[in-house]
Amino acid sequence: MNKVVVGAQWGDEGKAKITDLLAADAEVIIRYQGGCNAGHTVVANNKTYKFHLIPSGILYGNKTCFIGAGTVILPESFEKEVNELIEEGIDVSGLKVSPLASITMPYHTEVDGYSEDNAKKGKIGTTKKGIGPTYTDKVARFGLKIEDLYSPEALNEKLDVILPLKNKTLEKVYGLQPYSKECVLALCEKYAEIFRPYVCFDWQEMLENSRKKQILFEGAQGVMLDVDYGTYPFVTSSNPIGGGACTGSGYGPKMIDEVIGVAKAYVTRVGEGPFVTELTDETGDKIREIGHEFGVTTGRPRRCGWFDAVTMRYAVLVGGLTSVALTKIDVFDSFDEIKVCTAYKDTRDGKIYKSYPTNVYIHKYLEPVYETHKGWGEDITGIREYNKLPENAKKYLARLEELLEVPISIVSVGPDREQTIFRG
Image: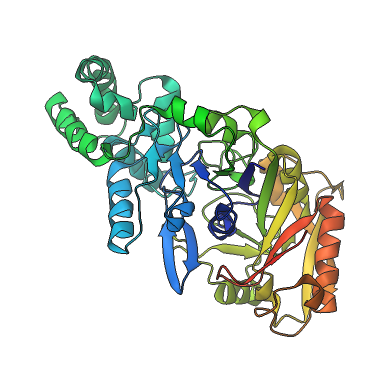
């Protein structure tokens, strides 16, 4: 069974742990979109590993871990992450990178930082890693791909087109320094050496030979950050949804059997954008502290709120979810009451929304309609069987399944691999 792991909220749901667990049965793990703006944390063998670009299945050492064409790669970040894994004694011989992946250049990070720092209105809350500008150039058809690094003729011809346009924009629009062709060529020579051990020029043959193997597709960010279906414009620049696994990996939809959406038992968000169930009070602070809700990439405190069944039902639909992996339910161990948002109410006219309203500019007028559930008041981090969970915890999970109309197949009760309950 080939599976896709999708973030079902605004990212940071614990996808890396779920990917790491499912990778045990997979032979090939493919990261299909996003860049080093993603932060994935895995706790294994009493060690904490932080991933940004490399599929977390690399920890097993005997898997093919492929970074697909749908990704954008900041070479310096890739090199740092690989070196850190090697220093930890992790075997990276199975790591492969698509020659069709796009390269994040220094001018992309400069533009991203300038745009974010100088935005008087419409601040997105990016990580300033150059992801959006890289995808912009990709779609505008004057980006650089990894394969260009190994073709001097192609690289020279591309730079003759790209640099005059890019330098004009850097100088006139952003007031930034232009790049000489010699400087960019020198950078590309350096980048070619970084990727040389890992670039997979025979990727078509690799994918063909993997057709009968167990494949796990790994996404970054989450459905509500999808550039087409998320809270636009407060989104990422790629497609984290299940369908993105096809365009980003090189496989067609017939290769996908299951799409597992990872969601927290509550909701978090980093950066700007609407968040109807956000808690800015002591309860939100309590969730943040117990759940250690600080960004892996930026260290920024995450915005926290109650579980939002409206956005999750939407994620089930557009994300193509066949089941849900619910993480961090243990954060509620000391809570007397737990709330779940089942609808939105428009404060202007009283209209009730049970389906997700995609016009994010009306969200400032929306308030959550909650139902309240009793807490269980005990530590569940040591429980490994579903039927041994407290009755109120099982009622909470059953209600979420009823609201979402898909099964909860995995329940995570802590950060370690072992702190997981699998349901048949």
